Amino acid sequence: MKLLTAHKILISTAVVFFAFFAFWEYRNYSAGDASAAWRSGLYLLVALGFAVYLKNLKRWYKSDL
Image (cartoon, rainbow, N blue to C red; front, top):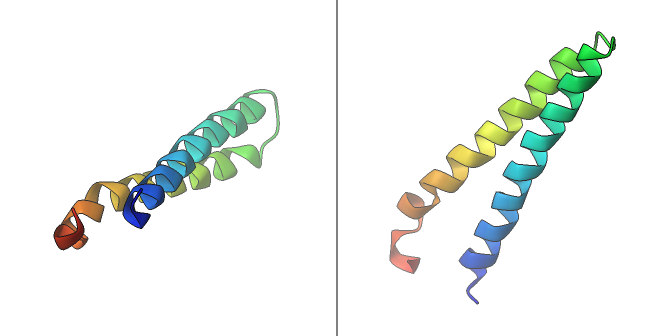
């Protein structure tokens, strides 16, 4: 396994984790926790950032693929 493959697996796991955690915090917001709304948005932005990074990883490391 190449190092890049392991990196992709870890970043994919991070995307799934932060997307789930954003959903979790949104549920807390729905239950009455007012500060959970901005935390949910923050985690969603982090998941989106990791997803964009994963999508553009091919372009940045063309020679390794």
